[in-house]
Image (tube, rainbow, N blue to C red):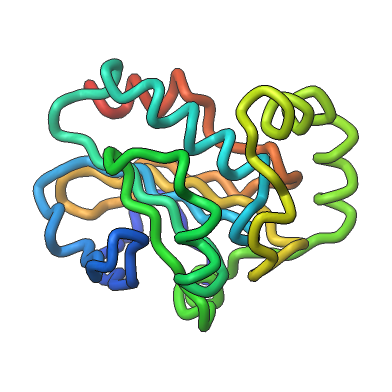
Length: 179
């Protein structure tokens, strides 16, 4: 089922790149951005995580960011070395939550995102150093999903991306985190 505004997201438990097991219950009482991404070394995905980390001083104090990839934990650990611990980066190797929340795949969406986001792709690879071939595990044709959840686990906004670069804007995330 697709996530909708007003839904309650209360259960999410996955392995994190730091070796722990992340549980949504542990951030109860905080607002959160939960993002579903593609494969382990997707340059678009890691650029978005980098942008999220770079905005951490703009977020409200009671806010957490969670990034979920459809890949093995080992592969995700290899491709996430440039990120600090201010964001929870999780592996959903068996697609438990990707399938539960109907995260879509689309070859056309990947193709279109690569054309429209050509300069983002170049920035991710050549300026930020996110190599798309570091660790090839996961959903290559996956499309992103962003979910803004309030302190009670209630979905306040959700966006099922149509291309690989289609996310809730960072300005919306910042506004939500401070409201």
